[in-house]
Amino acid sequence: AQKVTQAQTEISVVEKEDVTLDCVYETRDTTYYLFWYKQPPSGELVFLIRRNSFDEQNEISGRYSWNFQKSTSSFNFTITASQVVDSAVYFCALSEGTGGGNKLTFGTGTQLKVEL
Amino acid sequence: DSGVTQTPKHLITATGQRVTLRCSPRSGDLSVYWYQQSLDQGLQFLIQYYNGEERAKGNILERFSAQQFPDLHSELNLSSLELGDSALYFCASSVAGQRNTEAFFGQGTRLTVV
Image (tube, rainbow over all chains, first blue to last red):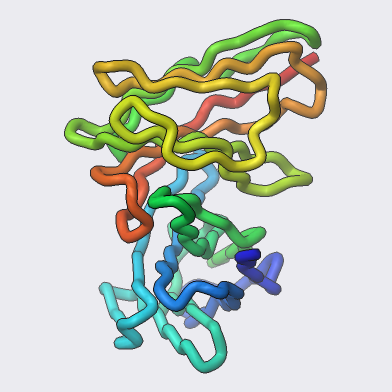
């Protein structure tokens, strides 16, 4: 069975600090897809990134960067120079494609609080 | 704004009742997904439709059913409601139905069963 673990339940940082959110996954598939979503206090889920299993190149988008390591089954997310607007719950997810479908298995989320 | 529209935003109903949640996907998206978010279960996949047909199914209760209409909007029907069904129900959509496509989520419908 597929599983996503986000061991950090809550992280508090001061604005401008860098913060890394951890994500560890389990799957038997050789081809799979990993995602990060953000859930701000308003409640909606916002797509941040998709990464496929055969591309281990790290990705940077502005203050956001992602480190994918197949050897440790991890897909960590770093926010550089955090801002108060980054305060949200962040979810890591794994795509399970049984029978051609697209089912996302989510981790339990990490609550990030950025304070002034 | 993701482009996925869910109505209503809030719903309060009594145990034993039946409700219908509605979702309009992003323009051009053929696949619709339903997820339930609760404090004890987290975010759980319920069901996926692609172009009107069921594509994947999660741990959806038998009291729950869904469908996708020819105009691609979807409805999730919840019946014989119990207190434990109180949750945030998300609809998401994607262009295709395979696992290499990202899903965009609506703002959710918060269901409270009293």
